[in-house]
Image (cartoon, rainbow, N blue to C red; front, top):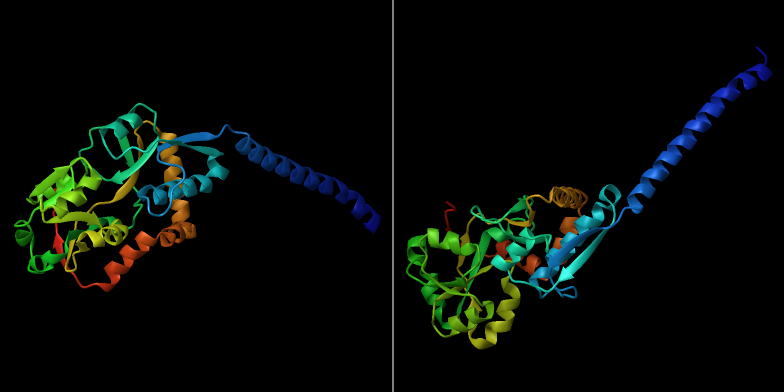
Length: 288
């Protein structure tokens, strides 16, 4: 066969190949256009929009934004909407049930009576399993003597009346004094209403700096430990958002962007360093 014949016979194959390439290109373009032309998924959270690291909500809102961005290629664009901040309370959980808020973050509760479902990926790694105490500066000797849960039961703790940790501490026989106000708990500690204010190891760094001048200090010898994962929660019927958040969190953990954001948070980095460096007596609580 002559070279001219070979070239002639190859033209149909070249045309077929070009056609396939064109078809693939059009298909990919249509897929991109179908994603970018979607109406943005609106996700409403009860959180102030302009926050700094001093606010607990700052990390969670940044993490939510990260995982939603991760899933734009697969789930389309999104728009975060901010409602006025609400404390973790029955009101906030009812707002999610009614569809006025789409997502929140909180410690896992076995007996949550609301129509919410957790996305079971830890937002704080293992930091949320550890608690330390704020105490009156002059009381450190009293806490250094504590070696067991039985010893700790001789002291009285302060806690928010609506906080999930309350149930675990009560089940372990720890005497508690309650307040509906976070700020009042510091004043109550100063006024000898109780002996210690139990705080998450990831929460306490800024509080130590703020209240040192008021005679409060970080207790230096104890850690309280119990299983206490913090999750995102959505309405149990909001399966599309739940799947998107789970996918985005998995992606962020795999590519390192979750850990990168985590390390940017001063209070989280401080908590990790305290766990690594300090030799404290661990009081293990049972989760029933």
